[in-house]
Image 1 (cartoon, rainbow, N blue to C red):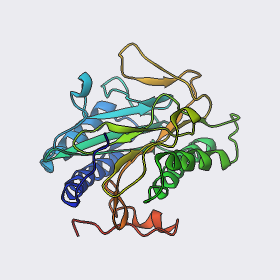
Image 2 (image 1 turned 90 degrees about the vertical axis):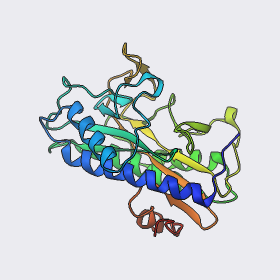
Image 3 (image 1 turned 45 degrees about the horizontal axis):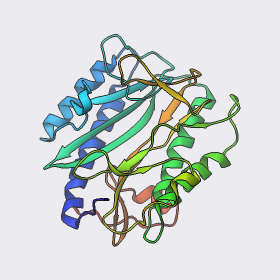
Length: 278
């Protein structure tokens, strides 16, 4: 069953989403050469406390931290620690969430540490982020879940190939429903497969976390001995972008974007739904 939210519940999710946006802003500023990933986790904890919010990552399935810090070839679920110190030229994907009055927000972004990054890394992050927005733009009444998957994959496949030969759309992880829990039905693939069919019809009240993960090589991953850290099997670096979105009677609202998605959706000719928090 897919949870359908009321406008009041979406407003609560918007509150949680803005806390996530605040964590993104604070950790992005702190992701500098010499900082450890544990330092970034401490920054996130402070933001949560300042907003009276709870972490939906800490303790989830035994996860020991407030955020996921995935550096370079780590795709997702990297565990913050003192030993992982950021270096000039690294890229890091930070995934985090927040809970307000039982309602969840969840989003991720890729940041560049220091300077001098190879053009293919800059393009990797751009392609991943823009594929997310293409998916968000497909979240409209009358569409089905597969239309989001098709838009994400289609955008990536239309881009010029990187020097490494191809973009790998990670197959083992994808988007999901979100609301009274962080991970809910439906599971959202970032590519199209006939085995999954068309998926649910998108109606007002559906809330999804749309999160493409793309590498500079393989689509395959493996999990390290800590049972959390996911890396590409060929060691190529990867990017991860995510937003939580609510479909309303007035269109999509990007719950974890400061402006509700207004600016980016306008590029697709879409008017973002009004912000319930004003």
